Image (cartoon, rainbow, N blue to C red; front, side, top):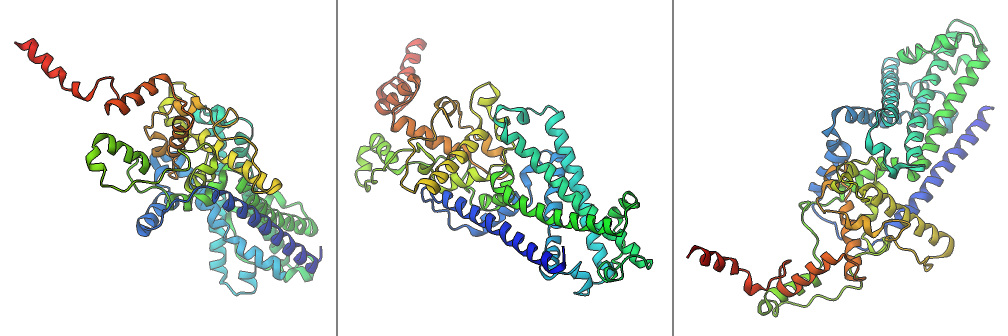
Length: 457
């Protein structure tokens, strides 16, 4: 491929990759906006601090040091190595080769230091990915064998790890073949016009260890390998970019806005509906409640479908890492109940994607007659198993709140559809009639004291 054709193909591939990604992101943002309004403005400093600690600093990951170390290695390695993309993009558009060194005059020592740093990080990413594959498949960790991760979710996690290994491998073999070519031209061999392209850049220590594997290759084969690895690295990154929104690894991007907008109130604090609070106040103290303003009635109690949830609930669903720490910590799941907080988040995201696809194909007014609470997604049995203990919220490494969704779905079941177990209905009736969950009138609450006095006489 000649230089100008290669530049044109590169620009087309680059623009195509970025455009497809932008269109998908536009749809995801539209889907999140299908949720109800929720004002999370203010407390900017507190929110930034939480985002830096939880998303950037990965504070909650370090409850378990070894996996946290490998996760941090992949995270830092992948992010920093992708700085190299800037040079690759400039090379591709302008038809240059290692433009920072050859055209922009970067010092050889500094350039080789940067590339060597990238190479050691690339090796770290490969080691961490292999460690995670072993952990997923051979260590028998329960949350990786859970029924939530059958078929696509399980395959997705593996695909990402393999892709990262391939991308890092392309990077190392690209440098190894480049150095082999530099060695040929430095010794006066090879085609003269290529000698101006593959100039000596200094030693890249890790990739130089791969050079003996290429020792039998001639100039043409080395150039073909070098170009293949270069194209493989950048095309692989563009494919990875477009794969991420369909993958559990979308949290690489979504963790930052999700932790920024995560709740600042204590975890045990439940959001009260004003209209219900007013009813309780009137029941407990009718005289005091008379002076307050009456809250407007809600259009619907709780949530039946994803569009009844707020936008933060939907942002949570797109941010889920599917790591399963929430499910592993859930006492209901531990005792064999159907509830899995991870599945709650995955089902919410899948249902939201289904509605988004319906909008794309059949218009915004189309209704498919389905709902989030159904046998296809989240069942009533799963919702009723929740103890509201907040263990799932506490365990999530990026502050996702499955409990908030469970609350809203249960509210709708009980307050809109009157679907509750008999024991719950008895409790609700007692609260309504006696202002307490027990079947005793308020006048009899202290009767036990009289009984004690009678016994002591």
